Image (cartoon, rainbow, N blue to C red; front, side, top):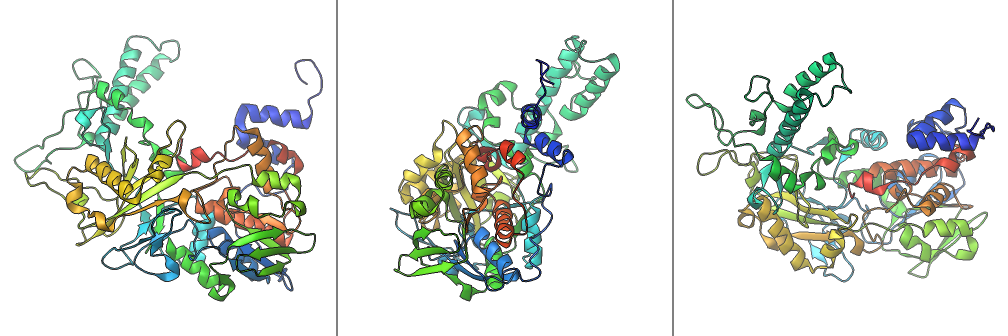
Length: 572
């Protein structure tokens, strides 16, 4: 019953559950009420047994992770599959750049920019730049299982070390400070302030006497404070923040002074992704293929068969039908297939569709979302200077072994390699990875710069984190990519906005095929920008084509939300 004593409909009940507990609560409620037509979680790759595709054909548009994964599973099911890629490179946003020229992976193409050919020295199996996706979370089960099935060797990707740095011009004399100092000094001050509040009886109404004692004990460990200090529980620094010079035999070591609370607050470090490693998608352990993300593409291409993949063949027109889908290409050729699975980025797909042959709601859904702007810079440093153990003055060196340094600057972040520690010779740094966020179009502005200007900005950001950066990083081998300028891709990920009602409607519609035509890729998943989303979307499409899964129950469709791209890509 509602407040007026009237019966509540099932839909109204689900809407109230959603308002109180979000989509997860709705999902669990619908499971309990037997309203779902799909399993509650990923339960493995599609069942392709029994050759359900015998005598049928599928045309896959796009040779990225989603397209290749779908082609692999569809061929297992007995379908005749052809994958068509518009560009000269297989892989989509899985793009490992090196001097290895396989499928033009040594060249970065951008509309309105000169092509960049990789000039890294050394072995391309270790000297490579991940221009696109760069890590795999441990809970991306579908992708990890696919890697295991295809024998793609993985190694840890280090998301954070306490030796990583944070820099802003607004605090700390504009000098880069170690992650451990920012993190632990902040904890110390928070613990001190909360302990003061307890001792001043500010929380007596919220906590019992025993609970206050327990919380003080927790704060002592949490912030490394003590009731034995003068005054009690004052934060006066911690060995957790490290040493300028380590302890030895005749010296107890020398700690840096604690950063002041005033400067920590002035720096606003938390607004610059400092705590991103705490978010679920970036929590340890993450993985990376040995030899680069290209190894996933190589394995999929081998599984599909290179002769089933055609490149340099842009689509010019798509006509849908009840029994066939017909696609025209830039070379004036055309192909028919029983089914078509498109991973073409949605903003680029709309103009290619013969609108009369598609349902208006489907056309509208395809045109509802844009792609995000995002840029990267890749450097080949002459040596691994960030790993130096000591300085010339015999103090502690940077001692950075993997992880990310964050900075209030257009480069946003710097990635250090997660392997090859202590090796001699060159190594690759991701010297920038930025994206637009509300009120801060950093990737838009960065992408509009010339290639030379982008690299100069990258050097300037590098110098803020490491003052001697230019000494080790030659500009001649630097690379830059703005994904919004990459032909046939046009951005980093689908920019879904959960607060936009039209996005909710569009997303729900895109999960269903229009006659024989289905769209997919990470752009049609709750993980835009992640390869896991691409794999899961491919599996969803394969099951639809095979007819072995029911569509989600209509009751669930009514409450299904759009993805929230900002939260799963870090661009918030």
